[in-house]
Amino acid sequence: MAVPQEFHHIRERFRTEVDQHLNDAASAVQNLDPSDMAALERIARHLHAIKGSAPIVGAKPISEVARTAEESILLIKERPSLWSKVRGAMLLESFEFMKRQVGEFVDGKPIDDAGSMIQRMESEFPGAREAAKKAKAGSGMSMLRSATAAAGDSHKAKRKVLFVDDSQIARELYKVFLVNRGFDVETAGDGNEALELLRRAAFDIVITDDQMPEMDGTELLRLSRADAALQTIPFIVISGKANDEARTKALERGAAAYLIKGDFEKEHLLEVLAQVLNTKKSDK
Image 1 (cartoon, helix red, strand yellow):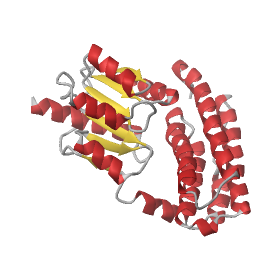
Image 2 (cartoon, one colour):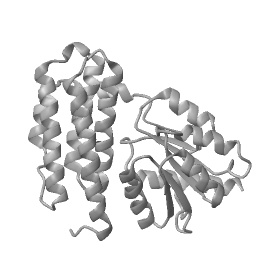
Image 3 (tube, one colour):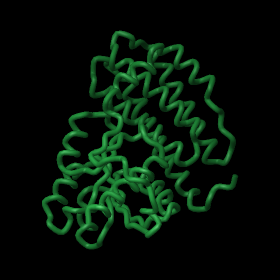
Image 4 (tube, one colour):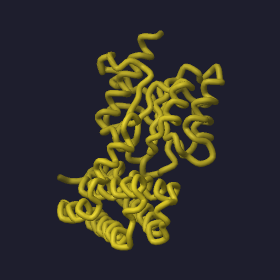
């Protein structure tokens, strides 16, 4: 299947961001103290970002390797005593495998389904899938609004969406996806830029990453709720971190939904958008 023209430059950005994530993760793995929970979390975040962006550009095998590597890190987080040089070498090998896959993908070549690599990783990190399930238990996705509203045709009227994320590739990917589904989309790279846009133009809804430099999504939500002109705009907050405290904080400040990156597919995001926009419409 031919790749739409607008995705060519996005694929290049995908390669750049994946390389950066993998380089940073590799550096952390090479110097890892398995008792350093913050370091393990940083590595997991890099892998989580790749896991989330790869399927959007059509590179699901890369996402599957990233998922398996992330689960392996979560196992070490649960049981630091399992860490060894051999397991570290396995992770580094998986990073190099993903780099090769990305290069082949961007060059338009078919990529390995990664089954062999995943099997080797699962053998080296037994119990990783279960550790990942424990880590995410109870945190995956929560909604403040009732999910009983039908999807209806809320996105057919060119609803205006502001998508906020510090990742340029995330902004471009989701803009293409949402525009192709009938939304009018603008993007912002951080909370400050988003606040300026919100004060200059009318938006029907905001989708914002929770973890951003300068101003995070929850602070953007707080400031919007304190502004009379912005306080009724619904927010969907998304995060790469499965954290009950962060989710509760966002919902208490008025988020209509809180989603964990990687735990929802793009089509599910459309369902949540429809539910929130229909709720807003019925409240008028």
